[in-house]
Length: 206
Image 1: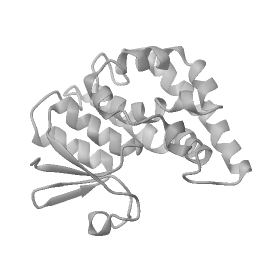
Image 2: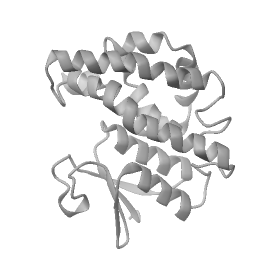
Image 3: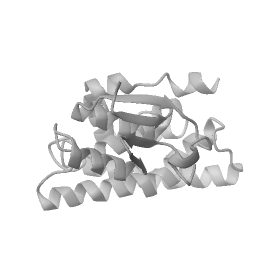
Image 4: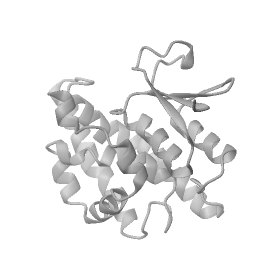
């Protein structure tokens, strides 16, 4: 039985981020299907994911990935170089704030997960048109978000960006982002991405 239990569901972007980190670092884990609102004492905010490791319970994906990086061997998710580590932190934060509050909210509305009035959805899409090019420009400067090696920042971006092709509006933004497209093609070959790939979001929403 795995020491690490991950509580969440495969369609969740941040649950996938945590699972990607497990695969990248070679951490054995058990996925315990748990939906938002069903977290009980695991997370007082009732959001997914959370993990348990022995008597430790952690929620918030950034805290979970940092715990993995400090506790387990395997490739580092944060660079040791201070500047690259700062870039990693910068883009993790940018995903969790700017990208979540634009592209991810638009995606969630589109498939009925978090419905909002059309006026609000339009604002999310308009904001995504401003936010996504920032990531595209960065990926035009380096192989990955924080440099030439994969970091936690890429694991936060990937689960959201890989749903763009399924969502009109986001699909066009993705098609206008050649550096993200190049990065996505490279990311898609990683065993961690293949091992955590959920069924297409359109099929889930049908």
